[in-house]
Length: 114
Length: 111
Image 1 (cartoon, each protein chain N blue to C red):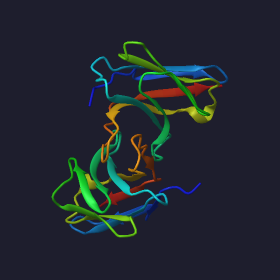
Image 2: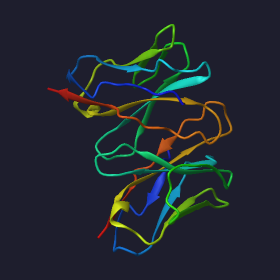
Image 3: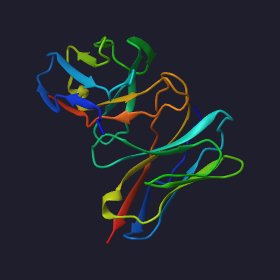
């Protein structure tokens, strides 16, 4: 079965640079979630989109922005990168049409800021 | 969302059943219990969920107490590949409802 695709899988950036992470949801899934997992920490919710509209927002820095496109893929844009942004970034997707929507996660993008 | 409490870690012998408990004493009537696991920096993997009835799928069984204040995830025949962090999450299933990951249980399956 098709899974969530994230690209790139690994990314190395310098401080103050920008980064763009991409997420391609499972076909026919209309909801995308972004999570951040720092070293030794549990995943933390950043932001979500349903039908191309932001549906919820967590502890996402103002330096980060995200959007969902007409084909339902999503991009997380990160500017003025800081050392503390080094983390695993997971995207999850779900089919929001039903009452019991389960989120399925991608393999993650590992971001290292030097 | 209701808070959950899980043991920090557990060990299990390979081939034996792994029983992972979760306490969610403040759960509301419309909140579901979800279980995910994360195998060493991979994306969290959905295991199972339930509302009040016991549930079983190809991966595991979920036993929810009658008062819904606690539950147990059962892996019937644990293998080394089941070594992971297991998260018990309580949430209301509606559009855009995020998962709130607490401190899960590190399950170590040993040969």
